[in-house]
Amino acid sequence: MREAAGWVKNLTREPAVRFRVGTRDDIGETTCATTRIVGEPDLLAEVAAKMDAKYGWSDGLVIEIAPQCDALGGATRSSRP
Image (cartoon, rainbow, N blue to C red; front, side, top):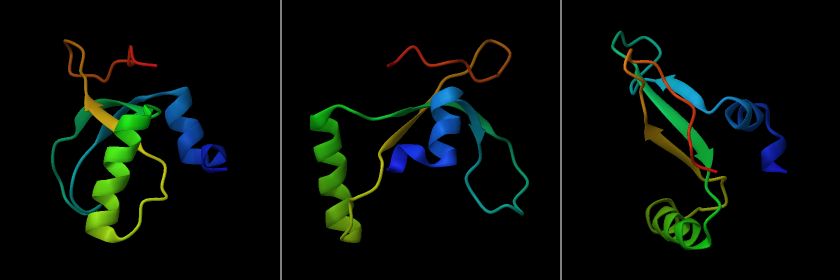
């Protein structure tokens, strides 16, 4: 079961994250965000169709990463389910 993976458990327990786009060697600013496992059937179908069209594969777990910072620039917990 995909939800049993450690990284999925971590995001479920603490959805507030910071991330950067690039390689591990890149030095740059991080962005705060919240994450959630997508469960809406229409959105899952839309993502699967786009993944199939581009990569020929769509069997992964869909995670939404949404920018969400508090006034001090830290990630805040998502109010989404």
